[in-house]
Image 1: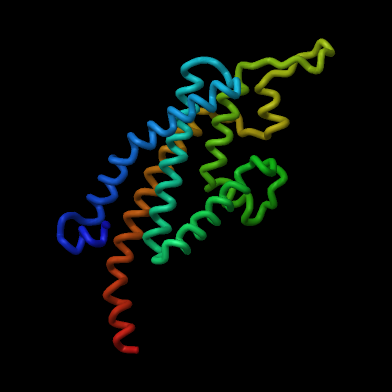
Image 2: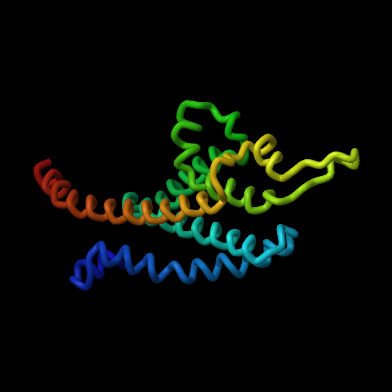
Length: 205
């Protein structure tokens, strides 16, 4: 659709990226809040509007990031099926190295932790949701008269980085949303500049 409208001279790449972002953001917010409310309260997570608001905000940021990543892949890969396979593989790679399936200290250092663990948006979403749920809670230690704080569980069992708050995790996700959109714009611009070169090379060959 963008290629067709661009050839007709209706708008350029920058206008397309900005308008698509602004138009999709409210709808992605709605589909984050409604299913999020069902999931949040059925599973018995912490009560309180601020906890639910944070939960929904993280879902919204993640859906925006998924959309941004898919659009970047779609701008690079011309085939629809190959684009789905490529983006799914990238999502799986980021997800497996986010510190959920394997704890951060157990990840192999080359590539999997440095840099994949730190560039995975799943890392910040998972740790933010952990902090949103566990901070402020106190658990009984199997009826032995001992108590375990949620902060202790986060630091030891889940190996969450506690040097900053959950709102910093959310802020990082929002910055990544902006970065993904800028990368999408750059991808389109580079593709436009490369097309004449590719055509010239194909003619010469």
